[in-house]
Amino acid sequence: MRGREISTLALDSYQRAARVALSNHLVTTTYPDRIALPLLRRWAIELREDLLELFGYRLEVTETTARLFPVIDGLDDSQPARTSTDRIFDRRRYAYLALALAALGRAGNQITLSELADHVAAEASQVDGVELTTDRASDRDAFVDAIGWLATRGAIALADGDATGWANNPSAGEALYDIDRPVVVAMFRPPRAVQHLRSISGLLAGSDAPMDPEDSDPDRSDTPADPKETLRAVRRALVERPVVYVDDLDRDGRAALAASRTVADVELLTGLVAERRAEGVALIDTSGRLSDQRFPSTGTIAQVALLIAGEISDRVIDPDAPALATYPLPDGDALIQQLDSAIPDGGIFGDLAEFGFGSDATTFDDAEDKKLYPLIEDSWLVTVVDDLVERFGRTFAAQWQTDRDGLRLRAIALLHRLRLIHSVSGGVLVLPVIARYRDVMVSVRDRTPQDSLFGTQQAPSTDSSEVEA
Image 1 (cartoon, one colour):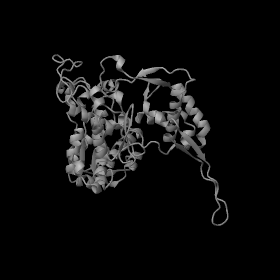
Image 2 (cartoon, rainbow, N blue to C red):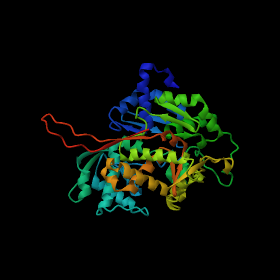
Image 3 (cartoon, rainbow, N blue to C red):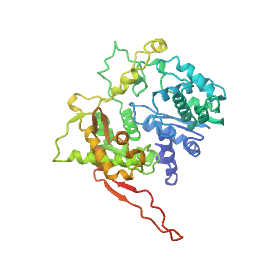
Image 4 (cartoon, one colour):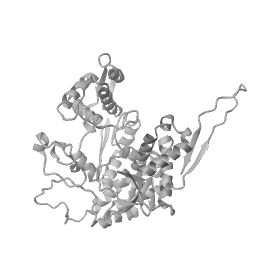
């Protein structure tokens, strides 16, 4: 590992570069900021070797882009694309994003927003269930969100006009964009041509070779696991998941996680500190440069999520409450099946597709090996949030004081992304690390009016609350 050869004085810079690469798989001259690409270019040689050795990731660095090609071990629905206002992309926005990127790949050096919309509309008309009608305001808004996502990452740059003006009135507004072709080319480069796949699992690790269903048994493997690849998979989990639970891993993976060198190498590369518990390992990011979500944090959603975490922890260990039902975690195949159901059965996909690929989802020797987790029902969560609103509602953001269901759903979604719980139909399964937030302390501070320089009293400011773990 090249990181061990770096001097103590330069190690912090190297670790910052590693965190930038791991948290932003695409870095351009402007994204995520103007200092990220020069930092990566400084450490390109060392990072290229260490990322490949530790994770199996490939890093390409040019004068204008840096692109990290990760190895995906499983599908993750916890990090969706978001708009500039933090709204999660829906299916329509994802479709427009994909079609716009394809259109940009065939365009010249510049393109107007209306021209790009016409290209996307023409392509969308050939896909069942996708439509872009520029006369419809909701379609224009979704399209502009997709274009904004591309512009933020530097694939296009506004040269003239205003996208918002076009969205409000396409007959009066217009926008002209410069196309950065290297960024467009680097943005989407899957490990396999998607037209050659019958299953999304073909993009996951361990699916490099086609599997003939007539000659292979997907439930049986006579080939022992490669220790090097097992180590890489565990290290990938450490930097990609908020928590790596021992129960997530097979026997080889558990042994790799228990080895101090496995975690120490990731700590050295990233500058993060590992927290070991009996249930698993979490990397603590005190810098805030690798995590996409700080927790605990400020804001109504984060603070309510922390309060809910404390309530859930107390409920699980409450000896006087009725025993909770326990269930295993879902096996993860549902998302694969949902995505696979959208793949066309005929046409170019059907003609080019190979035999398909097996899923690398964790397997167990038998069902009894599956860990069981307590189930907290939705009705209990509704009661808890209602109580929190009654007690602390005056300190919440105005929009959430009357939208209790929305507040609960957003807070639960945050806890799910952090792997403190796992959302299922009818409730949530409680995961072990949530216990670290059991002793939540709440303090509500009312800011008192203060005398001004001229002897008059200022109006009191809005109440605020603090939630600590």
